[in-house]
Length: 129
Image (cartoon, rainbow, N blue to C red; front, side):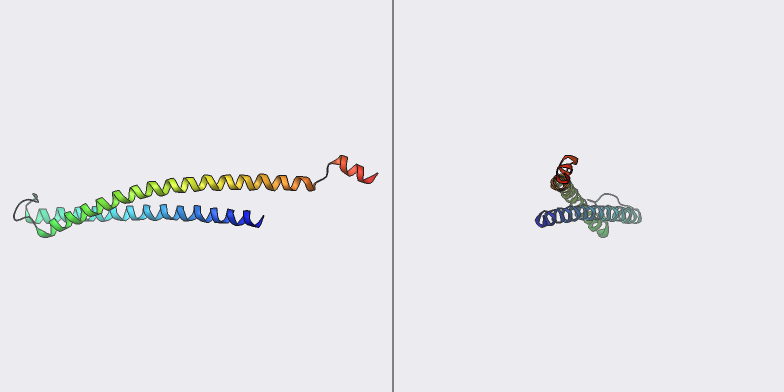
């Protein structure tokens, strides 16, 4: 019985860990999206200040070019994180299914192991008389 309990505890821990990973990735995606929006605002401000919106123009602000590159890097990283999140969510779902199966088996085995210890009315009557 002890090994089953430790397997259940391990599975519960794995589910919690995978849920934490999904949550962490969500937080990182939200942070990256916020940083992208900030960079968009900075780029728009620099372009407005310079009066040039074409990144290929020779007088385009250097800061705006660098901010555009950072924004592109963040977008790429966010896309990668979204792919990681999908994989982590799938792993979480699989772990939850495994845990549910183990818990159901433990519950079923726990009920069947208690049943032989309980005597039916017929057995009790036989012991008395």
